[in-house]
Image (tube, rainbow, N blue to C red; front, side, top):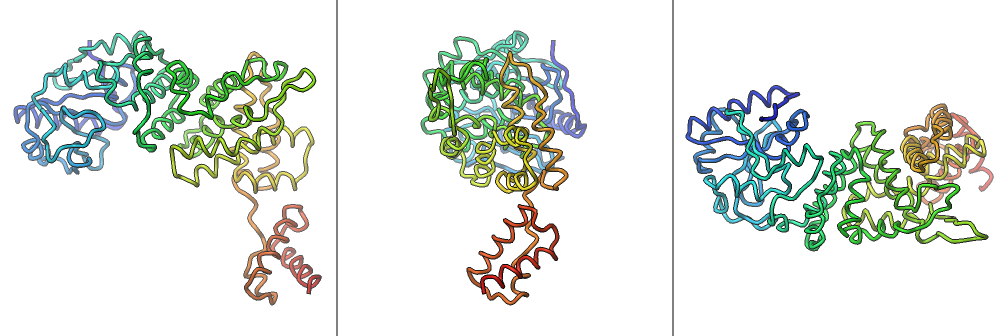
Length: 459
């Protein structure tokens, strides 16, 4: 029985029907492959389409496609045709090994390839299913539908080893669809290493894991099971790192991190940028514990682990991405993840909250990280994290929930007071900002008056 395609955007359905009819008239065949077929089997809507063309040479197909569509040819040489204005990629069965340099022109493609051979080149059985939309026929030579129904992830064939990135794809797939990796796939994954993989390809799989994983813990557990956690030593160090049972009854730091990631996944807000920063903040929040964990007077402590997390967070993320702005946004979340509870316990004043906003950038992000941290301690009951509720309310009242306090005194004000450009302006501006954070003044006018007194005192 073929799964029913569901389209949220009806333009995809119309475009697919038109393309199928055009290709059929030209003597070819359109097959849907990959994620759209898998998602249909899971009852999920298709948000993008991957299409393979059979029975037509690429040059002929380009003429067929041009009848009703505008498109672009993408890939290092040739490879995929992207239909403009729609999330539709069109390609041909290809004999080139995954990740290998493409030949000139369409030399590597074979539109007359046997369907089973073409499917065997895909990573997992659930992604090797094909659907003929005109015939409403599911082609499933490797039992992908069976594996999906059993909630199993299985590699399609021995061609799995062509691309080691598939191990990380397994990580994010088991997290996204709450699957269990079959033993044979775990075993073949152990034979691979990430050597030669471009960092940006690795980072893309981690981002999908953060964005889409409903059970991120399953992905991390798979990395441990297949041995790939050793390629992320900052995470591997969490395994076996003890915690005080009275505060962390769930176990070591690794187990705690898995629980925290699942807690984060249950409270995403749907903003990709915010969820990515918070997700990595949660993942990295305790990376400083292995270096700081000690036994003192019969208790397990990790004093200063928040500050010790700076280095491992930067090294973990820095190997995968050169996006310094992303790293610089995540690190403060790690450094301050204990602060919400500490400020709440001390019933800290406005100055401390303003200073926290300056340090972390967005207090709402920090509260999400700290909340996930607090939720990651089962079977200890979660109390709703009142520290977070209190801190958000205080930050909102001070207008620093989503940003650091905006300096009220600017350089132009000091120039108007008679200061000349130079290092002195920076020093006075810093003094003014510190006073503003302390609540010494709250308007630009009173800030300028404060600056005047600073200048006069030091003249």
